[in-house]
Length: 175
Image (tube, rainbow, N blue to C red):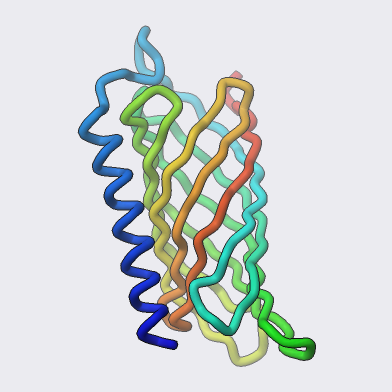
C-alpha cells in the first residue's frame, strides 16, 4: 500500500508541476492592464478531497484565506482552516487537522493562478502531533469573487495527503 501511495503522490505532484509549467511558459497577460493592484482580499472556502492513503474514504474542510496583492500578477497568501479525513469502515472514525499555511499565488494569465503554500498542520485528536504541510495548486479566480482551485496537500508526518477541490468566495477588503 505504501508503494501505491508513493506512486500516487509522485503522479499528482508531476501533474501539478506540468500544468504549472504549461501556464508559466504561456504567460503574457497581467490581471490588471492599468497599474498594479495592491488589494487585500479575504476568502472563505470549502474543500472536498480524495485522500491519497487507502485507509481513508474522503476529506472535507473549510478555510479562511487572506490574500495581499504585491503586484498585478503576484500575491502573498495566508490561510487557516480545518480538514477532516474520514476513515474507511463502520467504526473507523476520522482524524482532523488545523492547517496554518503561508505562500504565494502567481497569475501567469488573467484570472488563472498557480499557488504554493507551506506550514503546519496541528492535530486535533489526542496524541496526534503537528505535521509539516505543503500544498501546490492551480485555480481560476472570477471577477465576481468566486475562486475554484485544485490542490495537492500533504501532511508529511502522517504520510497522508489529499487531492482537493476548493470552492471559495473572496471579499475585497480594500474597497
